[in-house]
Amino acid sequence: MEKEYRSGFVAIMGSPNVGKSTLMNALIGTKVAIVTEKAQTTRNKVVGILTTEEYQIVFLDTPGLHTPKTKLGEFMVKTAYDAQRDVDLTMMVLDAKMGIRERDEEIIRRLNGPEFLAVINKADIARGERIQELQERLTALGVPQSAVYVISAKEKTGLRELQEAILPFLLPGPQFYPEDMVTDRPERFIAAELIREKALLNLRDEIPHGVGVEIERVEELENITNVAAVIYCERDSHKGIIIGKRGAMLKKIGSEARADLEMLFGTKVFLELWVKVKEDWRNSQFMLKELGYREE
Image (cartoon, rainbow, N blue to C red; front, side, top):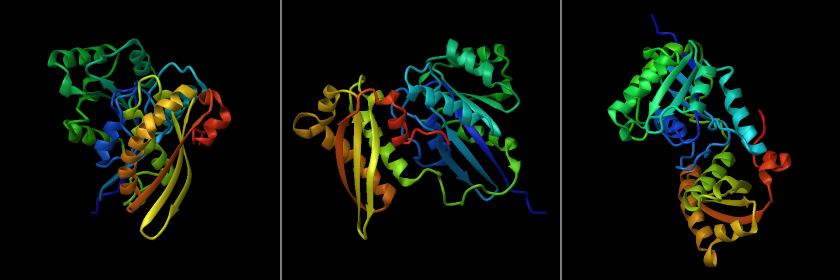
């Protein structure tokens, strides 16, 4: 008898900077979500799709759960909790080095249930006693030992066991997406995220949260793709830093982004970047919608 095909949705949740995007990329085997060491890198729900001959898992990488201070922050937190409503499984990612903080305890109490796994990430940089302490804390918070997994998304250890733990939560049903699809996000969204990633990696700590990227034009020709994009910031002083002396920083961001864009489009890319100031854009409903932070 032929084995029944199974599929399901899995929300990846947790505090900022615990490795949710790195974990999703590792599980599906390709880069879908941008990754930096900056907190709150992920601002929107990003879908990653893992398809095999026997099952399809649709991962929802969500923004880090934090106390919002702007309309963008409110959007991010709402996006994260909304993603969790209709999934078959919720995975709460924890940072093995940072431990379980008060905010994490609140999230665990809110999310814990039959369709819940706790994933202790970054085991490659934490001592064994520390991990054991976290496991005991999770037990005290009502999470069964059988629902706790220790991994390193960066080193790709413990992922096979975690993936096998997900499978019982999948339900009999068809593929939701074509087998060659790894994300449901359009190329423009991914292109904007790739540019933002390079900005986050290169800019000072005080600037990244105020950076947004809008793709103004994508023109796909026979052997080259022309991309025009705007990097928005909130202050004139930030604009100067993003551009850099004689345009050096903007050129660096553009050069690094171009390499990833060429992989995305499968052609040579001519990238035009501009920097514009929009004061307090993170509290502007119009700008949030313009940059793609809209409810679905």
